[in-house]
Image 1 (spheres, rainbow, N blue to C red):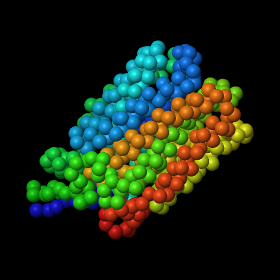
Image 2 (cartoon, one colour):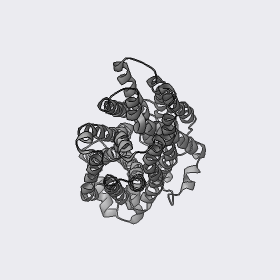
Image 3 (cartoon, rainbow, N blue to C red):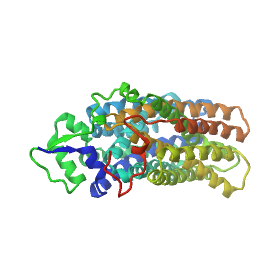
Length: 450
């Protein structure tokens, strides 16, 4: 009888068609997720004009989706470790597609907020699940690159929303860009058919034939045997994916630091995503030009995510993140000052790279920090707690916009969280389950995966 360590097998596998397939589906889901989230900020000036709402009320309308995301990240992230990740992902796609489209058919601020809250459950719930999925099935030596490349789809979704917004808002009205968000519901049957299930879940469920088929596709050199016994490393054999496990084995303090970092980064991400177009329009740019800034923000996010992942596979991901958060503090602060337009575009790109891009790398860090059995739970709680920062951001910045403060003070308010996040990430420490050595870059000639 052979004991097959599925975690070790996944760590050492060579990238192939199986990995490309997982990456493809996770990226498609994140693109749809990013579109659904960005669409509110793109349409915000038009929504405010048509519904006649104040900046502060508009902030609450945007935050309704973020409030839903907080619950979705916590509960749909945690439940995936119990019902299976594939099924949880399908539920999330259904939620954010159907209810974002439904929001486009409303004309009342309250009903709009209710629909966005329900969509937010899916938007928030899918993130920890796809991160956990991509982390589990990525070869260790390119894991951070794979996760951040997948998550750069979030920025692609934001860019898609900006491009469609420029073409559709004036021609068809703001509701059209929301109705377009219903299309991904058609992908659910393909996701259920193509997406592999989590390996620890299959072991717990006793679905060994399905597991053998997945392992054979993941590592073609594996030859299935009738007596093969599948196991996971002891840190991944945690019984029950409960929040208490996040504070065991020396993980408690670092779990709190992750929560602080997620809170601060998501505050910056949603402050910029929700209000950049409106602030730039208020600074004298046309709506089309203001949407171009959103496009540049998300293009910078994609570069930051992929570049940050590339760096994280070559240096300690913790120290890469410290540098990225520091860059966010500087670039966002400078956005509020008068500079030539080409320089402003560069600063917006840096802001996107060091906020949205940094958040993506932070997800990758959390995915590597927690053992496989509680990975979705750990990422889900960090993302869920962080959502409170996302909820506050549109409201706080909306209040500042309503006070007619100078532009530089609005951007300074967005930059302060970057300083706090820099300190929080620098204080993360690694106990028995996740040492810095384990999170260090792994090269082809390195020793066996942990």
